[in-house]
Length: 182
Figure 1 (cartoon, helix red, strand yellow):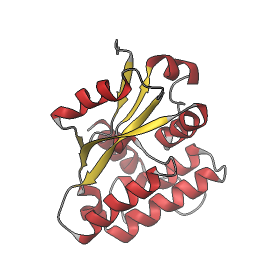
Figure 2: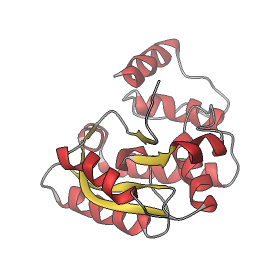
Figure 3: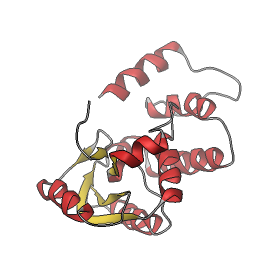
């Protein structure tokens, strides 16, 4: 169990530079911010790595960020918000929406490095379209449980999601469970 006054949540494929934690402590000390995130850069030297790094910076100006950019929050605020909702997908996005409505947040300049593995393995169009589709549907009120079932085969590396109304195979479920623990 975490014991500090500030909590940091990360995706598993994120590398945190040594100065990030010091920057986090200094960035919140005596400041009115209730939480926020870090700048991020996608690894790799391709045009799309640079494009998605830029796109994430633009998105942040609108208060949109995810666990890959290191969500941090004061413990008292986290408890006041009731923490992350127990939903199988988009829990970081949903939490950030509530955090942004509650008070002032900040994007700290220390740059986290995010692996581009998923982009390379699954392809840029497929990965991008699945993310846009899921966020759009979630924002429109589609239940996270449905979206998780739809996204599960995509996350597991299969080519396409199941047809509407069909469940993914048990092999997909086992692969997804294992990949989420890594």
